[in-house]
View 1: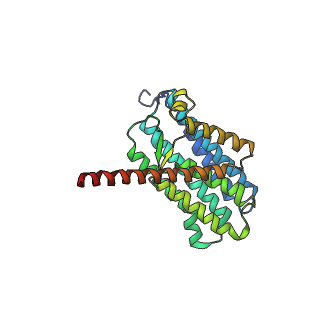
View 2: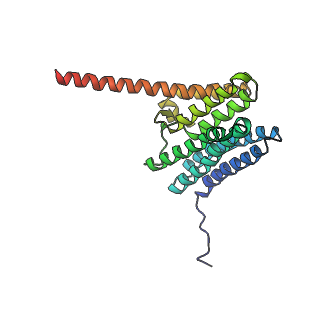
View 3: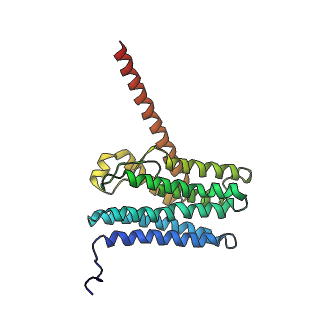
Length: 258
């Protein structure tokens, strides 16, 4: 009996939130699967992806509060994320737009899931500590999922994108989000609700708070433009840093020649 006794540790608290993330992603896929015959199911599935994002945020907060970050927690989180923010958005794209486009549609719909899985695997092998990071290499997979979901719900279904542009626009958004996830572009991490975090990055923290309020006030319609801006600004800042670095290296080389 002693050998069969389960050991319950404080890590169970954040892990329960992580499991909530996974179960929300599972429910999203179930509802998306009924989307062709029951269109309202797509909206319910999108809400479950939002719920998964909330669970994903809360599991990190609880891990820090309980000082229970671990390799197991990291691996579990990644496995859950690939379902909720990789597979589920891909299923959503397939049902909402790509279901009648043959093999090419299948490939495009699956691109976010493939890119997300690669992004998470790369993150795990490069992980050196459990401390909060100010930046991520590549677009975080939850951000990619929220970008795709907000585009589909408010722009593709909402009729904002003209019918003649829907195919091109959806392909563009799908490919760009997927490439951003597997890129080496440095993206800001979500600021933590602490005085230290706010003081380290006051501009980004303020922009983040304003963005949240804007999304709430707009009923969600501003979510996609804000996420798109996040992707573009991150890519632009990365390009500027690369240009400056190469320029400094070139100047140093010229000085050495002199």
